[in-house]
Length: 276
Image (cartoon, rainbow, N blue to C red; front, side, top):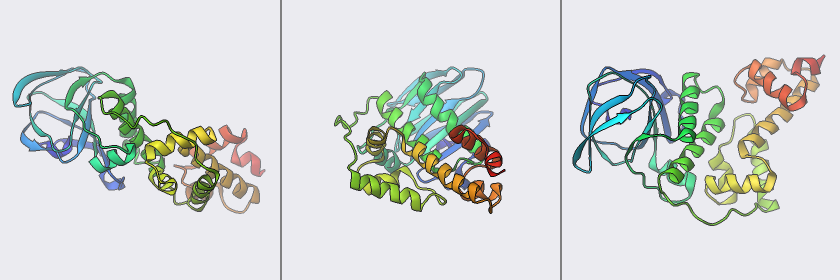
């Protein structure tokens, strides 16, 4: 919960410079810290990355309590909450700060989070760790990958902590609207396109769009985007003019090895072997 810390932590990795809309990921450590009646401007999810339990004092609903967070457990804190924490010992943490509007848009409903400590939720922890790992690497997989993880995080938060989602079952996307999405993806293969932008073409929330898209096409929006990039890359490889490293960079792959791995998985042959 970087926005609420009084003592400055040692930041080991941060996504702040990566410009991810509506979400900031951070990994750091601290010898001890205090926060007194600090207002948290964003939703936060934090994970104890230490190999030891984190023990500290907190004030919840104006009542003091002792908190024990075993390794790998999480805490949630809602935007606008007033936080008082006193941590005497060292801590190693990862935290995700999410704009409330980002969370609401992802789900298509207004979200209210509870402040909870010591959460044991493997699915949520997996997404949090994936976002931390992407941050440590400098965001090599691009915004579309982070956007998919951020949406998964929003959905898991709502499902795990009692926020009711729209019970309406997702339908299928009509052919005209689906072709509008396809055209958008084709036009933005090199620059990238977010889940929110695709959902806007259909006029639904990103959460409902992702469900309806998979129900209609049998694949997720992110998987579809990667498949189209690989198909565009295959055409460029077969033309035999552009260097493979340039193709990988132009179409948004992290590097040539990442491009080669996905290409071989998709087509059963490496780009270099196809070009020979």
